[in-house]
Length: 428
Ligand code: NAD
Image (cartoon, rainbow, N blue to C red):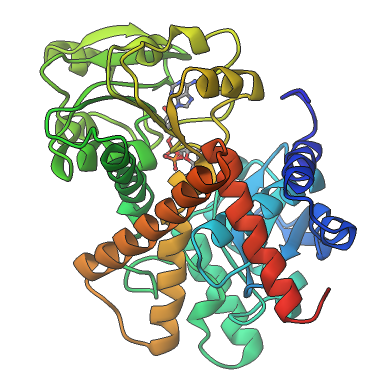
């Protein structure tokens, strides 16, 4: 199995491997290897110059045995049906491991959103809903923002759906703006959840004490809140963060032995997560090359940027001091690197467990929409802590019980929950 393979083939191969270990029935395998339903549709949009441009859109519902399908909508130039299928499959496992009553879905449009005006974006969002609204809904399938889509776009989509239904239906979509049906705590949720799982992992290995150190890749939404919470929740010190520099078109690692100040760094970071090199240097940060974050002598490594960054070529650069690898990003570790992590006994918190705080908060958003009653941020984060801790311990228990690597244990937990729901509903 190689990383270059089509993402859906990879998702299927991962599933096949665990299905074999678990000894799943053939019918379960046949159902879970493929999405339940797939929609592909044309999206004719009137452009600002008066012409009509036809875009292609997708919505894939991988599995909804445990509850409505759930997953983001990506607006990306390189979107394909197979990418959407793979992401929908991974959402099924993420919602199941987090034990939220939702299934897995994903959507997309083949478009580079930076080429569209605000009005064109709005018309494309409304068109997307018009094409597929009969298959969506708080009880069927609940989209959310993802790469290339924003809370504002979710607001337009919710509005379009509500108009078609003739009633206000905020629970059809999550990731809406605050004041427009969104939940407090959503911005912080994924990074916060990452650190809850780090805390539980530290507790498990007897390593939970103030002053632990971390090195983080990325300084966008997930990484910024992971850094803040590593410091504030755990009393730890983040000694380096790495991010992409849009001007120089390369990555840099910003280091400070006495610990970075996440609020200061945030104040010199643009909306795309690029830290200003000049201002960081002026404030006494040492700037090293983009890969330096990986070889730091720290207790915890948190890749929270992009996929495929810890590979067979660089995994040996990880210091012998590292005890925990917390995958804030989706798919940061290649299969070759994973073998080395296992051998070196580094406690890996797999992506679909580690970064499940975002979708868990989306689920809370939907619950609040249903009640039409909204919780303050502290309440959202406290509920998130409970869900993430419970998810972590279910995986840990499975790992200890069956002597499984944590990533495999997370798959076992997720797949077993989905299988059980399918059986309880009489699908099998
Ligand atoms: P973001 O766009 O806000 O930030 C990405 C960060 O990664 C930026 O700081 C960017 O500079 C940095 N980066 C990009 N390429 C890099 C490189 N080669 N080297 C170093 N840094 C690089 O994205 P985000 O929302 O923080 O998401 C990060 C990861 O977490 C992604 O894999 C995403 O799929 C995953 N994730 C995000 C959420 C969420 O709620 N935001 C939820 C689950 C998973």
